[in-house]
Length: 461
Ligand code: FCB
Image: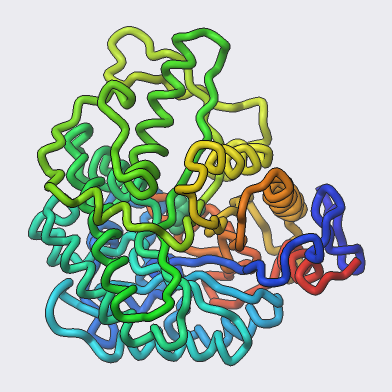
């Protein structure tokens, strides 16, 4: 497939919308995470994180790679920011590495770590790009994991201390803060199934990790607000609309159980101050890690809710002997990405509208903090033509516009990702970037999707 869009064509969305159809203050950006791009894993006093340990353990990452170098962004950040300025975004969501700032997870701060984020922030602002800072995108300091990681309550309070250090350093320039990226992935992949760091396989006994990560969000929110008057603080959840395979009551029950497990277990405590009940999740968990007052802390009103959307999930009733109250059905009728995820733009519209319907006045303004796609991009004659990504973005951004037409209060959209980068347990194979990374040379090659997004942002019509 060659591009349907080519330079010189209008930078429109799939329904013809242009940037002018969105509010002036709308944030248009790209998103990354520290471990996936920075490299420099052991320089300037940085301590090891659980991802350093995990990737250095044979057999954990599909292609045997690590984030030791990744995109070398720690060294090349100024050029990367200049390229972002050329793209024309008005915002950039990046994460801060906890073990770069507090190498052992508690106690002494490493000034060189904070200095890096200070320089990055200034470089962004120098180009008129508003930083959106994520405080935790999965790289827990290894010494804290050695003491139980997210299974222990103390980790939440150490996170609040670290958040205070970052907020006090950057708070005069950073307005928007995301505490935690995707609590569901942290606890499910990291502690229930062990496919992500720290690689623990606790299944239903992983619930304390869920609760302590959410508690960490609550206490870090307090810390950031205390340090930065006027801060806009939120949390980012990875949400997947759950669809029943058929109209049967059994499939409907399976869909509502999975929705309670993977979406509401994270949304409800933050927005309503309560977990869904065990009757709703149909998962037997020990709730004794929840202390009096925790849910009030977790439910402090948010200024913004970050939503990461990749795909919906279809389920049917579980077969005999399945310990889970649902069974996932592959959505093979849809275009598939390089991650094996179905491409369903209408799912993003439906998700944004359903949040408004479900949480009503408890729902703060929303930002789509991640949406994007991996396809097997190839460098041919010095260029990367990625028409499928162009169409993916055009249709998903149009879905955001449709949700806004239906009353959803959406304030921003961040493409995952700026650069091809280290995709966790999948290694370097999946390429999500608007910019192709040639890992052998660290050359950055803007893809056709970059040209399209730039044309959209400039309002070419
Ligand atoms: C999200 C993660 C992000 C990236 C994308 C593809 O779950 O937040 O780091 O891996 O998926």
